[in-house]
Length: 473
Image (cartoon, rainbow, N blue to C red; front, side, top):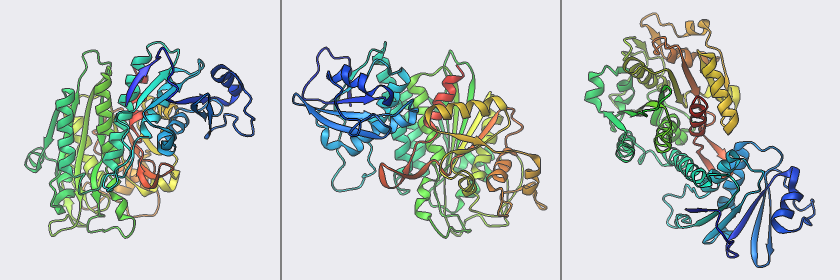
């Protein structure tokens, strides 16, 4: 898309979009259209409503945002424009913001508008509509509106990248693909990128990570990306689960396996966030690790009851090969913490069905050993519509993961506290780092929504992490 802020004249050929707050609908309509005579029964500015009219030869789309709309409400309202009203859009669009819009609200609108161009029809013979040449005029009284537009473009681009990484099929998104993606990002954004192959991972002691990938014909890749800024305020470490496809291994899944291309939603969020932080040149030092692996079945697959090693030096009894995500997280976290002096560490993983059983599809399960970090993540999530809620890390839950033959087992095998016991397993590999948070995003990274007929990626974590980081600066 091609954005232009505050053009001197309106084009009557443009679709004119006017977002409206419910509490001052009449005032906005009078200001923008010269009249407020649209009956409230037809359009009143309520949340998730819209109304199209023609005035003096120009097509006008009124978008209702309700009262005091959240960031996500505005984002979704604007995403609907291209996603559901594409017939109204030709070559030029004008978005006419009222003076009452804040910079944050305009950002949400512009991000959402661009997200509306995304389609999962990658392999259809008839290609989705191309909006790359669409011209978009932005009308606003906000100072530095050009920089605001640039920022929104970069946020939307990162979120769309996260969408793609989750939505594309597993014969496309392989561990090697993610490794190459990271290398290309490094070249484009001048980041330090390392991708360990099997030989290098073995020499580094990443035994749990390698065990998960043993059954796959696609070699695992251990991805490390370093972003450094000379004015950095703190050093954040990110780890994202990158299981590009999960059959469950020898403990094979019995249902829903076709959705398991999404089991790298945490890795997608970490990669996309790293792209965004680098493009925005945020004043932070960031080290991101994505252990990328495919969990499949072969004569080399790791076995239930097998004892495997780990980077942290702990032996692990494998109770269930479908509890593989925590194994690669264990090595990712251990490697990060042992090799980098991070002030805080956050991992994101589509880890347990138990987190869905607890929270449904409304929020991520948050586990954290530091109150400030926990509160900061919750606050940032509330601000951008990517919510999380804390669950305990009490030591009694850790006893459930005790093994009689090894230092720890990877699954407690009981029908309760699955998300908590998984978090306790992961915590055992954090080397007592004082500020660590684990986000179990199984219910929010991939799901049903209004913008597709099938489950799709949500890019959960990208806006959350950006807002959290910027809130600390």
